[in-house]
Amino acid sequence: MTKFDTARVNKNNLVVSREIILRGPIISVRVPSRANQKSYPQNGVRVPFFQFERSVRGGKVNLHLHSGDVRLLGTNVTATATLIKKRLSDGREYLYIDLVPTELGVRATHRLVILDAEGGTTMPEPELGHNFLTPAPVRARIMFAAKNAVVVE
Picture 1 (cartoon, helix red, strand yellow):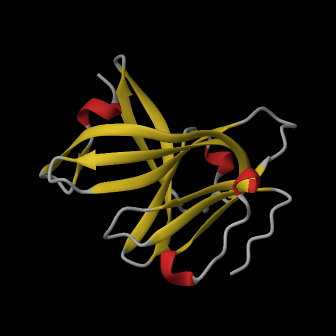
Picture 2 (cartoon, helix red, strand yellow):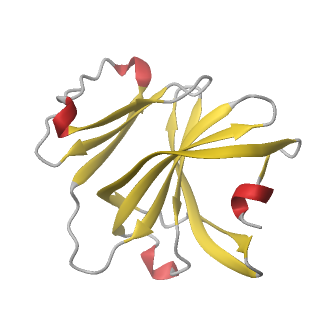
């Protein structure tokens, strides 16, 4: 049993599925010094991660850094990103980002940009990045822009 089978949101709504939308961009992200330390059961072991968020209109976009190393708090971490769509039993859907730290010396290939969806942001050409809108009620645009892409806010 994994976190995907047992996770609860708002106490009464079970997570019914998770779907990987995008896997692979390597980004550099600032981990807040006060990220929430959490864990989930997997194969009889508690797997630690840090949860933090970016506030947007209608809610937030959660980021989960899969590490228990408290030395990462308050630092910039280079990590492989996976964008996941979570569906709840009441029909709501959310996007969140899983982050797995890379080995030392690996450089970011993309920049993570999270903005309000109504912000009028223009996205670079498709070959320069990936662009996603969150499902309602959260109104955000999640972009993985190539390092050489220009994002105009």
